[in-house]
Image (cartoon, rainbow, N blue to C red; front, side, top):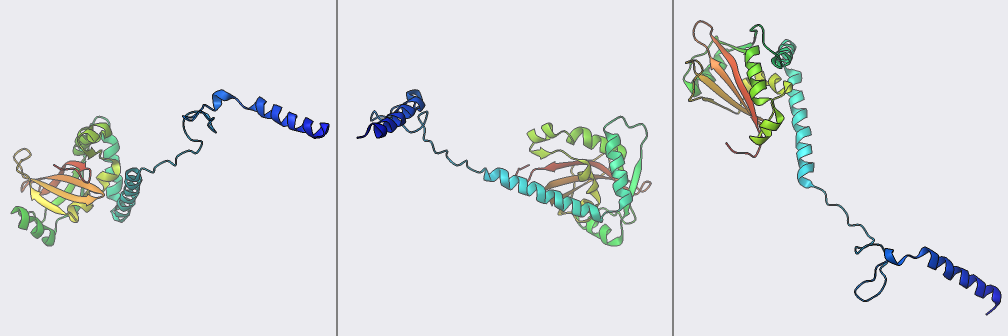
Length: 222
């Protein structure tokens, strides 16, 4: 072997030795050096995708889109009032305010009477700012609602009230009353399960007025 060639081999060995650190290549059970630091393989394992989380995110987006489509069809004056009531609900209500959003015609009155036995023809659906304050205090806190298997009521949820009372999935008469007056319970699924309550007024007020709302997560039980 020529001196020049031998010199090149020696330099390669020296470079290899200077780069190699035994502590970074622990021996395996057979006494051989491993190819990477630590006891694991140099190839990283692919991370598993959380399918449940992905599905939940997709459902949330679908629900949000569905709600926005419904809201876009509703009366703009009602939407404005609902937003105002919600924002004021965060503070102290100084003056009671009401908003009528629909009169009950014969067809709707018949549907309600067939289920509850109540004659409400000519009555009006209305929302009241004091009731929005109640909903916000009792059902608007995300952490508290999460513990109950529910979803916190938001401003957009309260905008859905006319849709819930018109195109509900179910309607029943509550066994409880409000100040001696009957209470209607509407449910409608819009992603999650919405529960909306109305107090049935007497002949003097002739109204179905807001009482409460909460949202139960789909898949949970009563």
